[in-house]
Amino acid sequence: MDGGETWHKIHTGFPAGNLGRINIAIAPTRPATLYSLLEARETALYRSNSMGEQWQKVNDTMSVKMRPYYFSNLWVDPQDENRVYTPSLTLFASKDGGKTFDFKGSSAHSDHHALWINPSNPRHLILGTDGGIYISYDQGTHFRHVGTLPVSQLYHVSVDRDTPYNLYCGLQDNGSWTAPSASPGGIVNKQWRSVGIGDGFYVFRHPLDKDIIYYSWQGGKLRRYHRNSGETKNIAPFPESEKESPYRFNWNAAVALSHHNPNGLYAGAQFLFYSPDCGDSWQKLSPDLTRRRSLNGSFLLRV
Image (cartoon, rainbow, N blue to C red):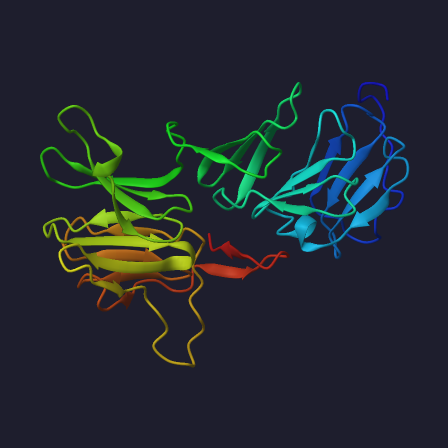
């Protein structure tokens, strides 16, 4: 209450034990009303009518606790303290202070991360998702995709040796794509070609064979795609026997082309792998590069 000079905890009503991500939203029309989306052993939505001095759990359904470590967003209507939005895999809205939620945003791409509510017209919403930006004029019942904004998120970009060269890129949550780097009159949407699925990460064209494209998506999945026939083959390395421990790939596991062998590929899990034959076989080049589990279950790199 003094500009940050002193602080006191306002957890009365929160569950005991470790607390994870805590999101706070304040009702603009009644600043004493706060909502908190609280990650805990039992994730739930809490409400306070006393500036956070006392909290009450109001909802613990999937509409508020879907992947709380990842989404965990709240917005309160600027003209209605009881209307609350929780963007997550999709959009949910409550008109009774969080007690119940209705499904919204069915026409929008999944994974909702940002929301703007027009202060002078709360029926007007702008929603940010993994598929771009959407606009609603009826509080989220219907959305229109804004297809004229270049807001795509690319993980990685590569080029081939053609003149003019072509681009190959992994598009967040929207597969892998290729397009020319130049075109008479400019590059248009129809010149982008889909070459992969999932969360698009690394994409490479074979250095010499224009028909072959490699693309990867989440968890170390890797495929070889033949453009002429449409054939795809899973080529990610995998344990050769049941006695061998599973390979542990990062979400966007590293993949690279060899600079010395046009058919050579590298892939990274807890081991470094090399394929001399376009992914048909793999050699393990390194020992286990992790040393021990961390407290949160991930692995630490050996240094």
